[in-house]
Image 1: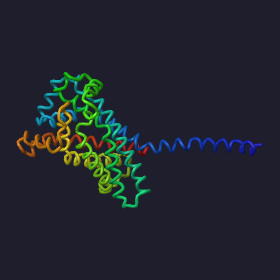
Image 2: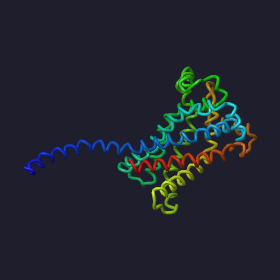
Image 3: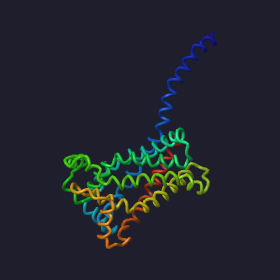
Image 4: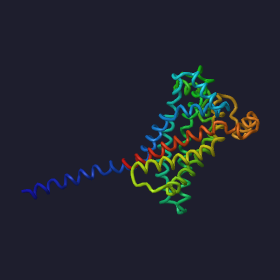
Length: 296
């Protein structure tokens, strides 16, 4: 009797496992996207005020103290003004950055007979290019953070609506520096993340792994932040404009270079804060991503 009951239950258990298996595989395939999204949310919530100080320095070439004073005059009410676009943009783009990189790496490895370094670099560039689809969110963030536009836009929706009359192209102002930054920074980030971690002390506990991941991501983020700082300065200047001529990257760079007395120190004004912000941001992102990857 017991054996008959067991035989009846066995097909049910097998059927149940077969039904669950596709769902488990689906979650497994999406975990890189989910972990990237959560890592971005965690980072933005913590570092947004620092990013706002840096933004003012990039746009106006002012000192850190002056940028902080500007934010104090704006008041606490405006401190997190403009957080929605970067929150939407970063959660989406980092989900794509990590998720597409993993998916495209596997896809290219299967179908393209080139060295692994080449396929992974190609996957990183393609993931960065895809991220650029969400340039309008970065564009609106720039307008909302610029105090010159405080009286023009009340919120994210208002800023999007105001750009509509200038055509779709206006939403993608500053696309060229974004494509350049995303592609090359992704190649360096994913290419160097593993080797850097290998040279850190061997982690034997969960907390040690978390610290190593933070250091690895933080160091990479800080170096890449300095390396691409001038690109972001030009991008910020481009995106602070509404309407008018679409100037090329070299033309805008030359204009900024002349405005800042042809001095490299003036061009990199705010770079020290960007270094510390990137150190913290990418430390948080990498540590959160790797932590979630292990528990999901």
